Amino acid sequence: MYRQEDFDSIKKQFTRITTLMFAGLIFFIISSIVIANRVENWVGMIFLLVGICVEIFVWGVFAAPIFSYYRFIRDLVTGRTREIEGLVKGLSTDPVYKDNKLYFYEINIEEDGIERVLLLDDQKEWPQIHINSLYRFEIHENFITDFTPVTEY
Image 1 (spheres, one colour):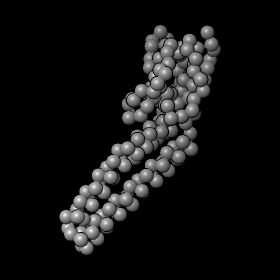
Image 2: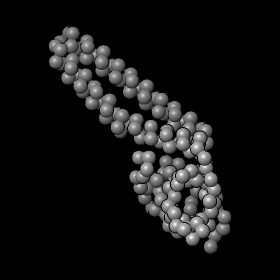
Image 3: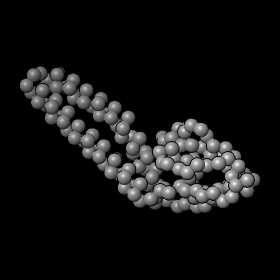
């Protein structure tokens, strides 16, 4: 389900946001120097301080989640995957905040008598999963990369 195109798309988003942040930082530095020279030094320092606060805010709200998702997709595309079969016992209705600072749906499955929790990315469109149905999951660690139904009970 995850392909190189997914990785390229998120890499492009991350490159765009870091370029904008770098341009914003340069803008605030140059503007604060000009203000410090033309008005007063303390006004330029306050402008630079506000600019740094804006940059920290943009990083925390926009860039950090994109960077986390970029690393997540990179690991899925370049990492090792394996297949398991399991009977779906439960599915969370709302995504939960897990592992890589991202949101996932939790899927409880039973594999060879052992219950496991698998995580399904909430930012991707997935086919419907039915409870008490047998599925073949392609996973990377406990993250689902693809799945297909085997049979229904």
